[in-house]
Image 1 (cartoon, helix red, strand yellow):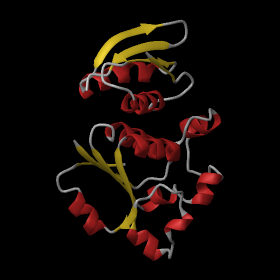
Image 2 (cartoon, one colour; image 1 turned 180 degrees about the horizontal axis):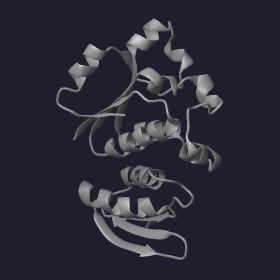
Image 3 (tube, chains in turn blue, purple; image 1 turned 180 degrees about the vertical axis):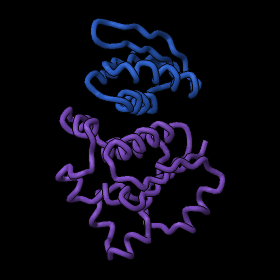
Length: 73
Length: 127
């Protein structure tokens, strides 16, 4: 599993950081994105669905969101 | 999806909005950003260095919060997605400017005719 810690970054920062990582990893890899930006926490799942990857989990932690995705292609 | 954005405003809030829409759209498809009028002037090196954009309360807040501003957003988008940024040739000719006077995000200088040809099959946003 790869962790992208994008806490403190504003939209579209967390999404862009996640996509950069997504391009580098193998198909089947799990990526965990940490974001303190609520709009990114909503937008990343939308992006993942539209791009055809798997949204594994979206979970609110204390002051940030944990978004877990799986690269499918 | 092919999206074209005509950025004619230099207000920080609008330039910022254009950069965020462009960068997200560029992760799915082709995006062309055409900077013209005050929208082009927002990219001048001295303006960017001095953060001297026209800005309202929100724009000033963005600068104070040290949020990543549009130049950085667009540079990052170019690494991640398919985004091309063009400067308006008319302004460059009229004011005898060269791309050296602008921050390093532009792919080329083009005229309106060329731009219209490029965006024939695109959705166009005017900001």
